[in-house]
Length: 339
Image (cartoon, rainbow, N blue to C red; front, side, top):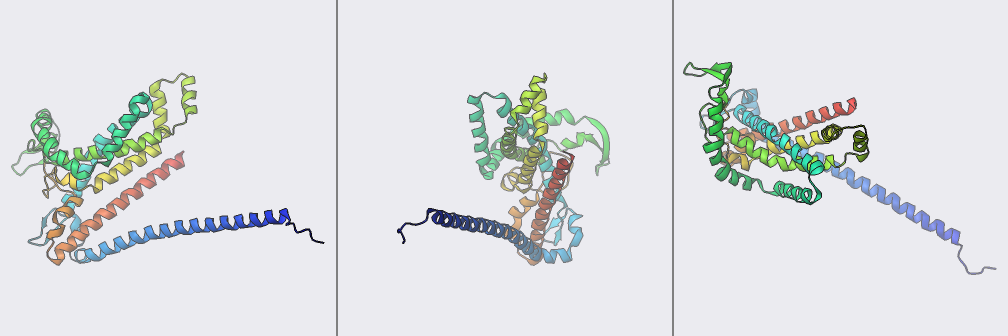
């Protein structure tokens, strides 16, 4: 005769089965959403690449590899060459990394290993605020404050220091005068709107990014390793070197992100670099970058080959960025294998 009671074991098994089904459904849902997201990112990349290829096809077929071998850029005569823009992008990025990376690592070390807590917090907050400032604001500051200061003081001092230093003969000017290194780096005199100004504004812009990431990486350094090193008699600088070596992969990744920001930056650079299409060894010469020429001339491309050349520039910029990231990943993989 039935007592009217439910078996608690059966109820527990039913609840457990429902929870297991729900977890399986949730796992499949998360996996499917993640997979769709990955496919969407790949699709977006392929679509952008296809659009650039389609837009640049006329220039690819008519100009070909000569696009990389000349610095002539004259829409009137349909002469297009990206050499000057690639040179300007590479030089300004190199200057930015030369000044920005040591400063960023130094600030990160100060925040994580030197500053007291009441100072480390505000400094970290200011670094994050600097990273959020729009690039056009940096450009305005560079054009109205940094460039005049460079022309009147910074570049003027550098010009007087280097113009008579002739260590290596590197070429000849059209007037039959020889060019010497490093005196050729300041040839032409201070201008304030040049490669140096473009590199410095980029350095200021990438410092917050590299600093913030390097700070977070250094904070992951295990205290056990530091305590063990100090127990063996290591000094503060030796433990700091140990932390940098331990976190070097993360620091390298921060530098790569900063370099990517420098390569793709547009507005701030075009406001201080001078916007001239030339390849010059002098840091005081005006120049142009690939992203800069796109911003300056894309709306002026009023005939097919001109517009196709602009797409060609965008395609080169995209491919160069992809190649840079691939090389960085290759270097990181080599470091991981050695470890």
